[in-house]
Image (cartoon, rainbow, N blue to C red; front, side):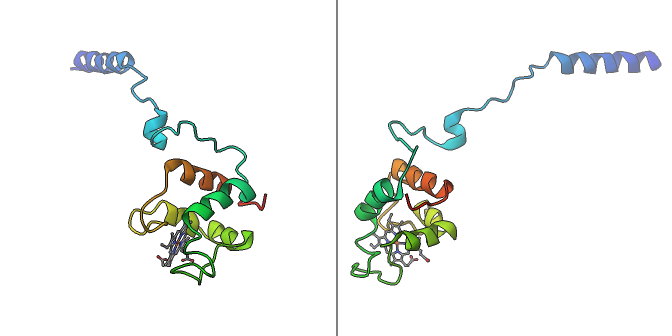
Length: 125
Ligand code: HEC
């Protein structure tokens, strides 16, 4: 009986040792979604990249003279910084159910640029 137990634990021990230890591996694409090719998210400036994205995708509505939404104008840094810091900006540009712009999500690159700007402090740079 004791002999069997020794044999069994020896067997289990050896089996565990023999198992490959590297079963888990990371893959950038699995972890972060499709890799962004040709999308430079370093040194994103409010006055340049962010302003341009907003002009092209948001201002038609989010300005005081905008077609459908004058209550949340995005005309100054302070106005955009407010939604950047309360979480609504990233929430809505990545939302499947209530996307901004309403017509559908922007390109991954535009969204990555806004995310980079928010994560580095939503500066007025
Ligand atoms: C076609 C008009 C239109 C466009 C284009 C548009 N929005 Fe909006 N947005 C609205 C309207 C209307 C609301 C208010 C209703 C709602 O929350 O869905 C809103 C609400 C929001 C809110 C929530 C604000 C709050 O305080 O609750 C955010 C954030 C936002 N938009 C960001 C954006 C961004 C960023 C873009 C461009 C990438 C954009 N929107 C483009 C019309 C638009």
